[in-house]
Length: 366
Image (cartoon, rainbow, N blue to C red):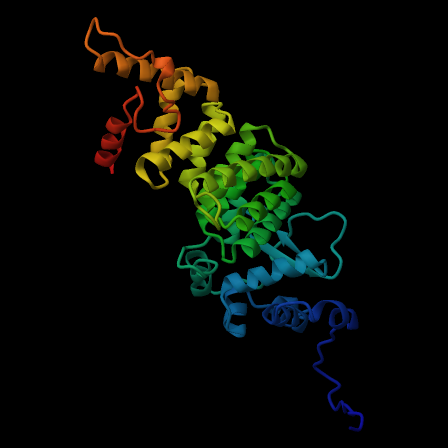
């Protein structure tokens, strides 16, 4: 096949695209993101005519969220920077390397019509999962005044962008509030929040409710670095999967409610893992199915009985056997010493803390 020859008959009304963009950025970028960047180049020399976000979305047949994600993507890649005014509204786009010091500027976009402005204020950024999402303005307003520096806003916006990639959806207002809470109130760094979301997603949990519970537990453990989080996660992963295996649960991590029980047993109850596993085994023996609630009842009874080791369980079992033997044998007759009775260590249905009664209570509660 002979070489192709490209003829250029246009010398005016030209949009110039740098070779560096084509060589290093275009191939790996989402096609919709490329369209947004080309549109910006189209208006580079006539910035006063640049469409606003809703108009860009109409021109490119995208959502406003798609446009904002594209802008944040190119900002992350370093080929443009976004500027915000004192009200945290997007005010300008600088194509090329960002200046060393940025200050709020007057909006570079021409003033949209009243109808367009109304649409921009009322419509969500995007609706990828049916949830109303938060606008770029709301993201800025979530930061308290003491943290509303340009650097803090940009770092938080980068975190939100990364979170969207991991979760595979546009963040809802609740999602943004939660992540902002991790950043501002819990004092988590951007790296720690990214690892937090990555850790939860890799374990099959994309629920922000679950992610928040993990974040709060890390805060309680005074975790401030990714290394500390990795060490804590490794411990909980091993513990959680050991408990799930004892219940015969395979192929998944703990659900949010199950994780609450596990943390309760480990942190509030201070039970050793071997004791928890014994309670799980006895649960299966008693009701023949996994039940975190049933196991929790067992552990609560053991805690009341000051049971801290397997030897304590054996002591409790022995005391029960003696009591049962005393009640069954008529007064004054010789009976076989309880020490010679066969061990009932594994017979969970015969305990002084009356597991039959516990079973009935659990069935009634369900």
